[in-house]
Image (cartoon, rainbow, N blue to C red; front, side, top):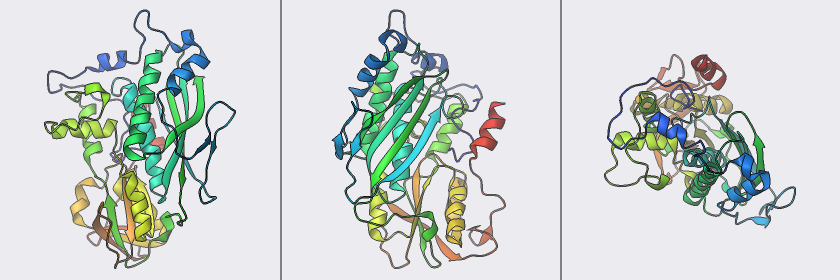
Amino acid sequence: MVGSGQECGTRPERGGGTGSRQESPAVLAERWRAAPGEPTVRELGEIAAIQSFASVLPVSAERLLGPGDDAAVIAAPDARVVATSDSLIEGPDFRLELSTPYDLGWKLAAVNLADVAAMGARPTALIVSLGVPPELPVRALTELAEGLRDACLRFAPGCGVEGGDLATSPVITAVAAALGSLDGRAPVRRSGARPGDIVAVAGELGPAADGLRRLFAGERPAERPGERPDEQATESLADRSMRLQLRPEPPVAAGVLAAVAGATSMIDVSDGLALDAARVASASGVTFDLDPAVTDVLGAGEDHALLATFPAATELPTAFVHIGWVHPRGAEPLLLDGKPIAAAPGWDPFRDAGGALA
């Protein structure tokens, strides 16, 4: 899932940080451990732990029947449901010494909401299943729920968490399924790009990859006030890039705007701009020719930007920036300024995480 070639779970190099208010890896890891006398999931029990977690979560505007039975019931306004799922696993996807419980909840929501948006849909609900060690403090569960809540409120108001599961696991495993509504529109697929279309992107490319490099080099954000995204004018570029790696800000609302504007194809840029652009071009049977201005971010992922194509006469939605053109299929699915890219940089979890963790 990381376009920079590594996930937060791969082994970071140790180094010096900057700023006097940073939390060390050891301090961050302690936030996942129970202090003396602090209740754990084992002590509280499954039912009470779930109640503590659920009490923080937002409610879906499409809820017909919420948690309490074997399954929830969510309205499907136009008789269709967009469905996706993504997971974050301790080790290959995140590390306790880099991420807080709040970070994990936020990121779990963000990556799933971005996939719904990439179909041109409006997110309506999340189903969240967690596997946690029995000695995890209940506080960490609550903080994770706060991250889920705040990301839903930020990116998809009206989307709530409507059920899931809590199980024991030797490592923390967070899985979410996201549901969405097309509201009468056709889904925007990867296979619809046509020669002559504009290639455009909504959202930033590069900060999350830069943040990952900094985290792996031993840097930490100078402040994490209240675990909320630090949007102070004084936030440094370095701190911002690390924050966006830990808590992505996908342009979820831009997915619907793209669909309404007539987008012919779209994808969530999670594994790297070059790799994901090549995927769309291959699915569509065309060639993408990207502007040389994106050269430095070809391998950048985990910003969860939206890459889309539009007919040439389209007035691009405000969130989108023109970065290339679609041509008839040539020898390669992806070009940069008219020239082939030797190998599209990007993230393959089986290839890259396995080697990095060996």
